[in-house]
Length: 321
Length: 297
Image (cartoon, rainbow over all chains, first blue to last red; front, side, top):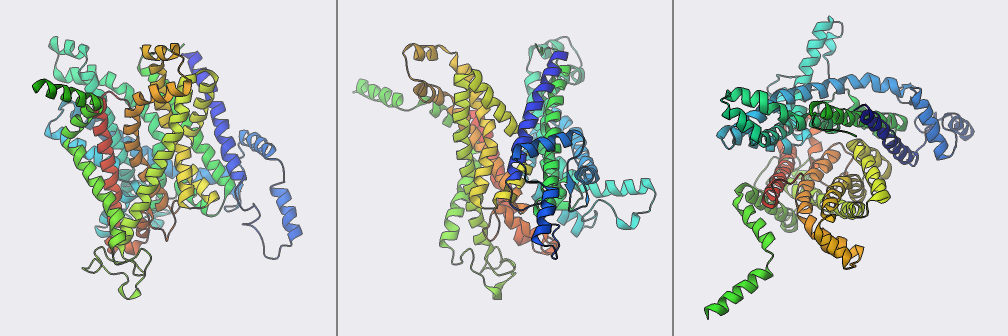
C-alpha cells in the first residue's frame, strides 16, 4: 500500500509537468505582450521596450518555462497587472466562493442522490423507480446555464424569493459575522441547487446500477435465507459493497464540478474562480490564466489520486504490488 | 418447391448480418429509445429544411418588426434588430449539430487509430500513447478551451479542432482495453500464424469486434459535445455572433430585461439543447443495452 501510494504520487509529477509545459507553450504563442495593458499613451517606444525587457525579457521558451517552475515552487505564480496584485492573492480572494459553491452542491447531491439511488434499486421497475429514472435523465441533460437562467427567472425575478446576483448584500457589510454568513448561504441556495442537480442525477444513476449489481449476488441471497431483516440486508450488507464504485466517482466528478461551477458563477454573477477566468481571457491576463489552470490541474490530479487511494481503503480485496 | 424455398431462406439469412439484426430487434423493443431517435430525426430535418424554405433569411433584418413576441408572421418572434428567431433557431441547430458531428467524427478517427496502435503493439508505444492521453485527460477542459479560443480566435473550425484534440483519449482508452483482451484470443493467434499483415489484423480482424463500442460511444459523445459547444458559446467563447448557435442564442438572456420579459429569445434554444442531449443520452443507453448490457461505457 505504501509503495503503491509513493508510486502513484511519483506518476503524477510527469503528468503535471507535461500539462504545464503544454499550457505554457500555448500561452507563450498568444498574441499581445505584457506591456499592452499598462501602456501609457505618453510612453515612447524605447521606454516600452525597456519595460518589456524588465517585465518579460526576450528569453528562449524553455528558459522561461524553467524560471516559471522554479518561481512557482517558491509560491510565486507571477503578477496580475490588471489587479496590481500577485496572481496567488487574486486567486485566493476568489477561490472561497467557488469552493463554497462546489462543496455545497456536492454535499447536497450526495445527500439526495445516494438514498434516491438505493430506493430506486430496491424497487426496480416500480413507479418510484420510473419517476426517479426520468428525473435523473432530465437532470443529466439540463445544461447548467439553461437551468440556472430558468430558476433565476422563476424564483429570483418573478417570485423574488432569492437575490438575483452576487454573493452578499452590500447593506450588510458591517453586520455581525453570523448575519453575513447567513446572507451568503441565502445567496448560494439557487446556484447550489443548479450545480447540484446534475451531480445528484449522476450519483443516483451510479448508486442504482451499483446496488442492482450487488443485490443480485449470492451473499445477499444467503443473508436473506438466514432470515435477516430486509433493512439489515440492504443497508448493512449490500450498501457497503455498492459504495465502492461511488467513492471513486467522488474523485472523478471534481473536474466536472469545477466546469459546472464556472458556468453557474457566470449565470449568477458570483465572484469566483470561474468568473475570474472568463475576465482573465477577456483582458488577456496570461499570468493569471496560467495560474488558474495550474491550480485546477493540480486539483484534478489530487482528486484522482485521492479517489484511487480511497478505492484501495474501502475495498480490501484490491491488492497493489 | 419447399426445399428450394428453404435453401433460398437459408442463403438470404446467411447474407444478412444476424448479429446486428439481433441488436436492431432488441433496440426496437425499447420504446423510449425509438421515440428519442425519431425526435432527433425530426430536429435534424427541421434544421435542414426550415432555413431552406422559410421566407426569412438568417441575417435579414426588419427594424419595423423588431422585438416582436411570437405572431402568425414570426412564429417564434424576432430579436432586437428584427431577425426571425425561428429561422435563427434552426440555423443555429445546423451549427450546433454540425460541430457535434464533426468533433465526434474527428475524435473517433484520432482515438481509434491511437487506441488500436497502443493496444496492438504494446510496450513502449503503448506507454507513450497512454501517458499522452493521461495528460490530455487531466487538462481542465473548459479552461483550456477558453484559453485556446482566446488565442486562436473564435471560428467554427478552430472550435472543432480544439474540441476533438481534447476529447480523443476516452475513446482511445476504450479501444485499447478491448484490443488488449481480443489480442489474446485464438483467432488472433491464427492470424499471426497465417502471416497476415499488422494493418489487416487491426482493421479487418480486430476493428469489427470493437465497432459496437464505437457506435455507443458516438451517440453519447454527441450529447457531451453539444453541451460543451453550447456552454462555450454561452460564455461568448465558442462560436461568436452573428453566426447563431443554440449556445449563443441563449446568451441574449444574460440581459436581465430579456430574461425577465422576453422568453422567446432564450427558452426555445434552451429547450432544443435539452431535448437533443436527452435524446442522444437515451438512445445511447438503449443501444448499449441492445448490444451488451454489461458494456462499461
